[in-house]
Length: 160
Image: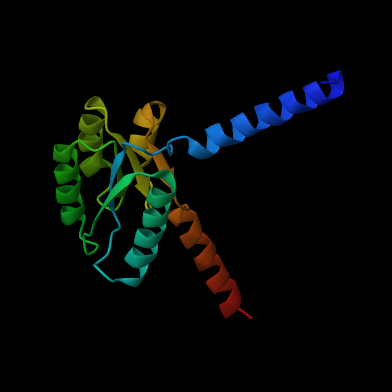
């Protein structure tokens, strides 16, 4: 075999090994279980959008997903969170509606048990400041900034 064809063969085999390793590798979410509270009721428009996105992400990652509903009731969100912690999943995704004072002690408890927690839709700034280095995160917009922009735009529109 000529030196060039030997090098070419080596490159092709290395590339195939790399591709087959990455294609055949276990999904990054394998062996993970995640609970998500989608906020609204079963079949509600917002909850359905969140649920469908979560299901697709779980499928893409190979994770086991449990979806719970809270009918936009903060107390039900807290109850769902407590049930999730008792089940010891890998992670819990919460709606932040109950607020930091209600969630922070529970999130701290979950984190001490090795359960990663992230909030969606409504930020929990105190929890974020206290536990971001342990993986706590937030996905969503700043509702306060969004409200201020809406009010400013409404005032501008009315004055025309």
